[in-house]
View 1 (cartoon, helix red, strand yellow):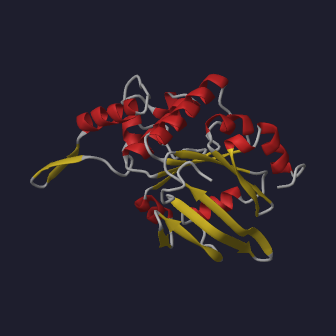
View 2 (view 1 turned 60 degrees about the vertical axis):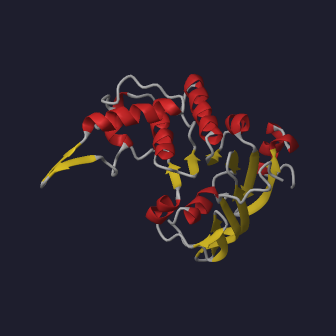
View 3 (view 1 turned 135 degrees about the vertical axis):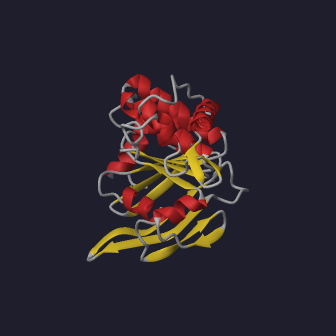
Length: 253
């Protein structure tokens, strides 16, 4: 049971099934995330992790099962609808524009505009100030909000995506392989930002192949294999080796 067992989950997915022709990608999978927790979603390639998340974020429509968000049944038909609910996804490519500044990436599609009569212009000064403050709020210090994103390291890019999600009211943050190809120091930073997001009330889904990374920050682990739920385990119930064995099938549920 979660430490948040008396709360309503941010998201509860029940008996989610998804088929592609004759292939069953998900077969009756249950998945739950509460506020103030990090849930590691693990499995080998083809286990169903990406398909489950795409069902949650409106990319795919499940063939069976129900999704509840903050206790209410929902049908999420597009990523836009998922974002409107408060679901933000940070994919590996991060959807950042390299030639634009940190601030412009932070506000991408949500720019602050000032106007006098018919004249409108971007409020650059206010966006710079708010972006810097919002990032500082979760422990991220940037050199300048005017710096271009292509000058940032992988960990810094992840920090912008996480900070943006928190600032714009995300309730559920999905991190897709956030530590992939990062150095040890950069990985440590991303894990600290993940912890900060949790402490500020978000639910976090941490999708990864790297058991050692997710084990440092996750409260629970949901493991999929060949489209089926192996199980969900509290951190105190399993070691890193146990999780690796459950992923590969060397240990049964």
